[in-house]
Structure formats: structure tokens, C-alpha cells
Amino acid sequence: MYKNWKAICGIEDKYFMWAISFLNIESELGRRIVESFPEYFTENKSKKVGPIPLSVIQQQAVDFGAPTGSLEDAFKKYCIPVIEFGGEKPLPQKIKRWLDAHGEWETMEWEDETLLCFYGVRDWGYFVPAKCIVAEK
Image 1 (cartoon, rainbow, N blue to C red):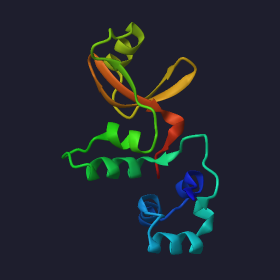
Image 2: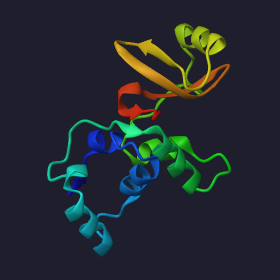
Image 3: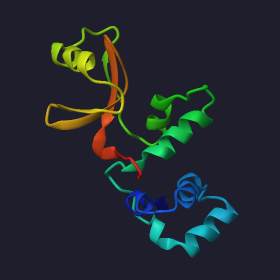
Image 4: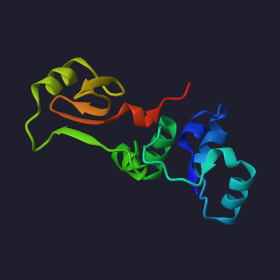
């Protein structure tokens, strides 16, 4: 059994959405909730990642223990690819110009994909595919 992230993202009650998102579906209680709310679960593993609610990612980062959390680890937990620019590799000029003019939680186009910056400084940026997450209202 797998979580149906598209359906979960549609839950309007943020706390219920979090409960389903963090539910251990292998536990006895988890199995009972799966039976009670089958629309939020699926038998088939999706080849596509997400979208995962951004607040779930942020809470997972906090749960990993750092004061502001480890967003990179949280994205990886949900199999969302993290794209890093900079560090030991030279920073492409397009990325450098973008980082100079924009900030975290903004999107940019890169090689036919919309990327969301979740950490960016002058010569280093971490991005995820925007299609893999959804910001709740």
C-alpha cells in the first residue's frame, strides 16, 4: 500500500493532511486508517514523485533535528531529487545571475524544467523540481 499524494494534497484540513502524510501505514492503527480512508492510499506505486505538500517536507526537516531542519534530507526522504549548483563544481553563469537577483522559495526555468530554490547563497544553490511539491493555501 502506498500514499496517494495527489489526493493527500487536496485535503483542506492541514492537520488531517499532516496526519495522513506522516501515518505509518504498516502499524495496526495505520492499517485501520487505510481501511477507513482508502481514497488517500493506492495499491500501485507511482513512477512519478509527489507532489508532496511543502509543509510536510518542512515538518520532516524539523523532525530530523536541526534548529531549522535539514530540507535536503527531507526532500530525499520523499524521493524528491535535489539539484545542487556550485560547491566544488563551477557555478553556471545563468545560475549565478539568478541567485544574485532571486531568493529562496522562488522558481526558475532550467533545461525545460521549473526548479524551486530552497537554499541559495551567492555561489551555491539547492533546487528541487517544482512539480514534486505543492504549497498549501
